[in-house]
Image 1 (cartoon, helix red, strand yellow):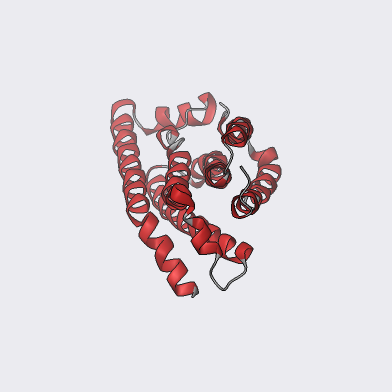
Image 2: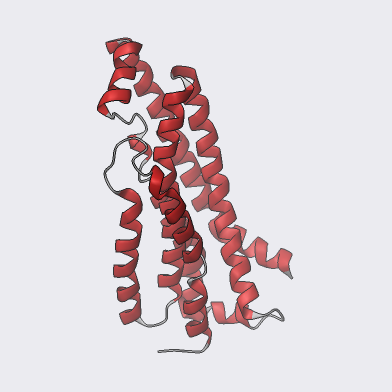
Amino acid sequence: MWKAIIYKEWIKIRWTAAIFLALGILVLVNILLRIRHDILFVDAINYWYNILFRGYNYASMLKFIPFLAGLGIAVAQYFPETVNRRIKLTFHLPVKENRVLMGMHLFGTGSLLLIYAIWLILFVIISTVFFPPEIMHSTLITLIPWFMGGLATYFMAALILLEPVWLFRVLYALVAYGFIAMFYQRAGLTAYLPALPELAVLTVLSSIVVLFSGYRFRKGEM
């Protein structure tokens, strides 16, 4: 049963996941080429100075890619379930409804985390080629809220897509906008460091809100 559910989810998101994985890699290649060009143009010492003392973030091109990936995976996974209320067929399987929904949710979350992990590993490899550990660590800390924001986007998009009433969808979208915007405020390197634990807790808590829309959907709320 679970193998069939996982296979169904994989069929839905495989091309979207592949596209966003490739998009992130292309952005990282662009970052690599830009770093190489700038270091050759202004020399490494001046480039490092701009990062350390002027707050220049060489990874800024990556900022909204996790957000787009989270949104894209959520749409690919949950929008088909809302067409003609197809998710009701899933809820009629001989498995508890919440378990099925959370199984779907965990698969999407795991797929997104795998994409993020590949991006971050490549980013670390690129950074260690050009920068000392101090610069790489500072930039990596700056990236973490963007990836948390991508996860939060996936969770909130799932909540909105499964909600059966358009009025509630609009209200959820307004709340989601304010919530997700917290992860993408303009800030210098490591400025988010004191808030990372709180943002992590909020991200984890947002992962279960989909159960509310799932409950309303299967109960036929209109």
